[in-house]
Image (cartoon, rainbow, N blue to C red; front, side):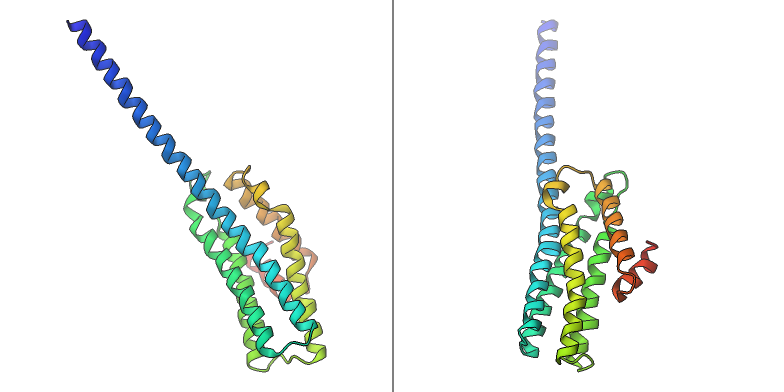
Length: 201
């Protein structure tokens, strides 16, 4: 009798253990899916969508579009950069669980790019400190072209297919390498001059 009770207790314990292991696995799987979705959202909006929007700004400047059209196109860039920033802010806790990794540099770079577009370009155009005459347009095309080219380079090295196989620590370190490369090959670009000093790159 005692033997049967012991067997029943063992069986019940085994079933309970299997149940909780299953629940934990389901939770872990769900967490991994959510992490991947947030990561993809950050790169899709922050990088790819910003490239698309920057291309539209360049086209509007090349076509001689009105100030309103140019501002609208720049506003779309600002929005996609802001979404990229916020996505990686949300990922802070996910990264922290993995070898004390951080998204600080990633979201801060998006924030710096957003501020550059919002304050140094949009606000300057609105206040007429930057005109949209031919010479000024050409300078804007050049400046915005640098940012677009660099985001395209980041995208080629930092896209979803690459990221899904990598740890948060790898992502953090690779991002720092990429930003360092970009900053050091554009030493006369105002945005990158500040980044170099701010992040000690």
